[in-house]
Length: 451
Figure (cartoon, one colour):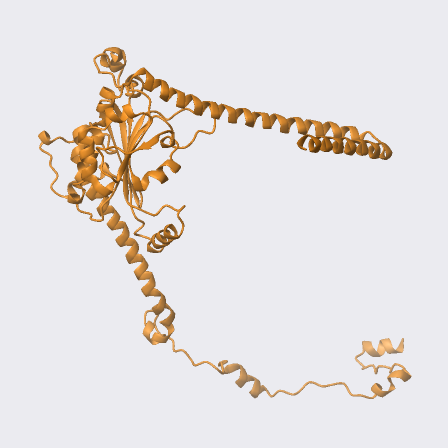
């Protein structure tokens, strides 16, 4: 109580010393550590002076745009090494795209008059092609409308034409080198040189014409109710555009093997040289009579004029890829022409192949007039189609039988599992032993039957 009043009136209380344990007697007399004394003047001077790195130099403060005062050429050595390669790649990319565009426009400049002469609509504008009597002439590459040619990718250009008798429409595709990516182009050429299975990159024009084959009523669009009412009279006076089903081709011999491997329709034909053709070309046909009718003197002359630029001319009614099921329908009758493109971008470089393309555009008229063969030829062609259809049906039946077998095995397994679940451990063991014995007996029977 006395200690309480002493503390209340401000008297200091002396703490009583705790009893010292004998085990810690050596540490009992050690003084408490006291903090080091820091002079106020020393602390103030230390806080006023800024911290300066010991190993770096002081960078002077300048305006944000005075870069030369804060940096030196040594700071840009890495960029100096990288930038030339970036500039070269960008330059090659721009040059390659422009080169391909000039080449495509050179092709359309050379062949636009022939397309516009044969078709009412050329290009993707949906307008009537200009005629010579309209007073519209093209004097340069720049005069070719952009609607005539569409850039699908940097190395692929397409065009389209429609509005002609016997032809529903024609698609033309230009495949060019990947000049905008030289590394990829060199790699593709190297791999095609090392491996025969890889097709070497080439520049080609591939045109595919889809014939009406008597289906004008279904394919020609009707734009008004009046045309719909007069539909019967509209097609009444037209000549017949139908022709027989067959596959026939004239092929460059260097392309013959790969073409037979890549295309299903050409694999149905047999190859035979013809005396009218040059030695580097051959005929692939289902009948010799077809060749006699279609291999005209004008066609032979055009092929000879095209020379090594000619790859193949195919007339077919079968798909390019082999059908997987008997229900797959054929894509319809069509004609395909493939030509290699010259290295020059000038329109005059296409003069040797121009007659062949012009003949190709008029070839459907020849088919509608001449491609009607004797009954024996048609019977032979139908037999080939029926044999292929039997193979497809047999493959379908085999596939369905396999599906039924898998489904049956699945049901048997479910029944077996359900039966085993209701058995005890001893009954399951006996059931599995009997099952194993039956399997061994079946295997023995198979072995004895083989022996």
